[in-house]
Amino acid sequence: MNNKRFVAFVIKLILFTLVGSFFAWSFKSGYYQLIIDDSEGFLFLLKQHINMVLLSSLLAILLAIPMGILVTRPKFQRLQWLFMNTANLGQTIPSLAILALAMTWMGIGFKPAVFALFLYSLLPILRNTVAGIKSIDPDLLDAAKGIGYTPAQILLKIELPNAAYPIMAGIRTAVVINIGTAALAYLVGGGGLGDWIFTGIMMRDNSYLLSGAIPVTLLALLADQLVRLIEKLVISKGLRQTVTISD
Image 1 (tube, rainbow, N blue to C red):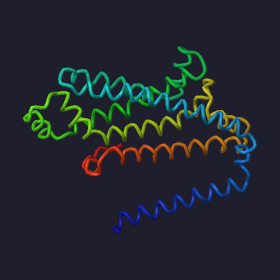
Image 2 (image 1 turned 90 degrees about the horizontal axis):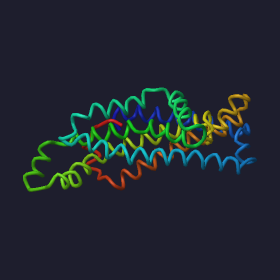
Image 3 (image 1 turned 90 degrees about the vertical axis):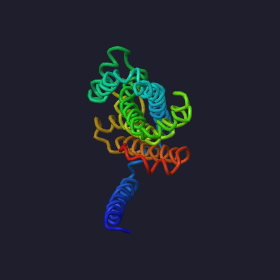
């Protein structure tokens, strides 16, 4: 184990110890009793939270990946700045402002919350799709053309498989961001675990606050690991190692 890995291991060990100690202290203090006492309400809010994240993330995937492919085609490369800047706009506007705009247009409830999360998810997936496709070695593309591959075959057999790792990294980033941001859906009546978080803040009640915040944190960690597992199942180790794009 080299020095960098040793330092990283020590830092991880300290962080895990601190987090574990916090969980043990809060559990011993009875801050999670609300989850047991009102398990039906907790499961209802959890289901709302997951549904918001799944629907908004799925919509973002269905739009951002085809959009990323489109703007990397020679005919549409001139429009790449327009698509990227539009997606950037959705990411740079504060999440509260997006929620307010969505609420003005769509009213209150589940729909504006999903729409706001959808906008927030677009950029990481679009950016990584474009970066992944553009990072492919031109010699590899020339070789594919040389053996008679059509543009569709090049896309399906060369570009998408080689760009799969950064695309999955973008999806992972979008999903994890979505899980945390979905807590703000409470402000537009969208439900989710944000209900308990904001109730805890307003009432200064740690039981509500932690019973909402900790499951959101665990959900984000679980989603991150789940997408990483999917990456390992669908992308070969060689491709993961050769791609250096940061997520």
